[in-house]
Image 1 (cartoon, rainbow, N blue to C red):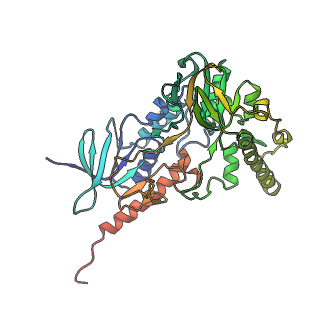
Image 2 (tube, helix red, strand yellow):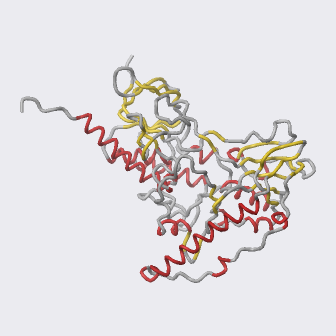
Image 3 (cartoon, rainbow, N blue to C red):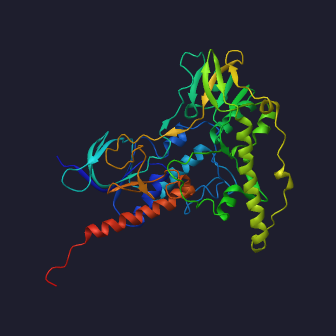
Length: 423
């Protein structure tokens, strides 16, 4: 039986896989993309209904194709983003097979390359690019027992307020997902409790420019990857309703009860750490630091660009702490509060169990330098901080893919070399 062989196999047909395909095609490298479902499937089926991109359309895209039905300053919805990637796959004629799951990859014995077991049979590949992204296995902390008398779901499974059981909702996690879902639930008339942990909260816009522009000119997108043990800090930002700065004190004024980090459960009550004021203050410090750096940049460079940078003194005003911050709730009886649903906006973990090669460190994390694995022939793409801060974003993954395609081309050229004999 003949086994199909491919030069480079890209696993995953989302933004990372398509960016990789585009750059491999430009290098003339034969490849195949395998996607277990549809192109950009997670944008369609693993996001809530009202989700929009966190960055404006002029920024959160590939450099060689704009959004067809969204103005540059708009925030495309999740279906528009998925449609964009499907259109991009057609534009570059990506060699992609949908509905094929990669189940196991291991090295071939005695020769280079890998045997790849899929739902459609086995194939061999000389190289593997892991482009499955960071959003694979939902993480739910083991704090609340299953018999606590409330529904529990991860943000991946949330769709809209009407899909939840009647009653109040406790949202745990105040990154982009938790912040946006909590606001949507509050606007839908639900009583909402929001557990807030460490976070950064950049201004959505400041002095006429979106924050993605500020992070660009200030060099923040090119910040190098932190060390492996650096604590992850959630980013609270939203493009919903045209985009505005996330302000948890405003959330409280609109009816959301803020809480510190969830720390446990006892006798029908969720327990919370007394750290809410600290987390808000640290978020404020991050917010103010962006404003200060932007002001300093304008003072130095503002005259070289067309257009004005109008003064915005009101952006520097921080409202006073609401009562739920001054006198924080440390124990919340779920039944007394009428909570019917606990929604965990607590992020994801990777699942690389299918990749059975020596490509991971002792903690199980991909061991790589700018996506080039220590395991020969294995490459990673689309991970947060793969090479810099922007690596997990649509435009950032594009540039990382270009680098990896260059590295693959270099290795192929070495493998193609044959010494000249008789010279």
